[in-house]
Length: 100
Image (cartoon, rainbow, N blue to C red; front, side, top):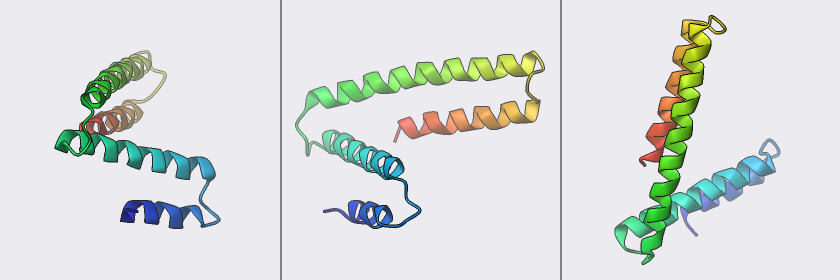
């Protein structure tokens, strides 16, 4: 078992760890492990990279739509420019994580 999974298991035993948060973290790690395995040839599943790319494109489109909504809210005066900038930064960071 990898050290990351050991760490996740240790976090899961703590009272403050929520089950759904631990599950989400474990799934994210497993996804990253499979994706990197496919990229390095350790997993011989050519379909996996295609699925990963399709997922990235779908998330990219959703993030673009969210960013357009945030800008529109600012333009209509429903949120401040500072809040818009913070939200756009969060969306940018989420998109940057897709490339990992």
